[in-house]
Length: 281
Image 1 (cartoon, rainbow, N blue to C red):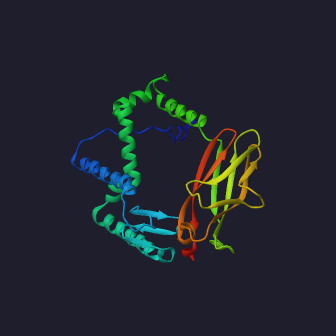
Image 2 (tube, rainbow, N blue to C red):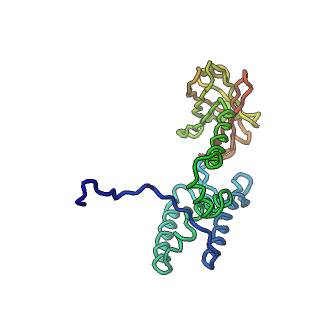
Image 3 (cartoon, helix red, strand yellow):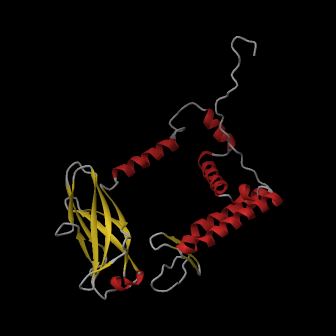
């Protein structure tokens, strides 16, 4: 410290390259990683029959219908205290397991640990084990060294070239959920946000895909076509009308899909939403 130019206490970042090991606990960790990844990827594909009008996915957080499904259990928004109680019990269980067995959660089943192990495994397949990665890190910059970055940039550029020129977002109006008209038909309102990425004004046609009975009407317009200026996002109020005594009008909720088409380029995009019928009251 008495020298005129004291030595810096900070060092540049040194990367850490873990080496592959073979041991009893490491083997158990691979098995646990396989089980947890299987749960993550297989659970969305498990079906559970709840009837014709309910979703058949075994585990589902249905934000549109305001439900939480877990196999035979269905939780409504007013019953979310059950979920809060389960989370509190899980937190207490985590403390108990950590006190009794150590870092079993953080070391084996934590999502960050599981995915980090998987990423390191993929990196080892591509770049080799620890010694090979250390040599690659210390080697001069060549075409081989940044090949992973170059590949990612190439994929990003390709995605940029094929991206759609239309974007759409649909937000249902929930107050009220629906209105009953004088002819018995049921109407729902939606805010549809359209984005035109072209450099000139374009016409967008809005329709419902797969529902020939329902009608789409644009607020303060005679048809369902809108003009969106160049490089602009426009917000429009859309009404969907289901004739009386049809399935959409009588059911609780019906899945619908808005189809947006730009006639000049024939480009189409879609957005999913729900239609509320008489049973939703």
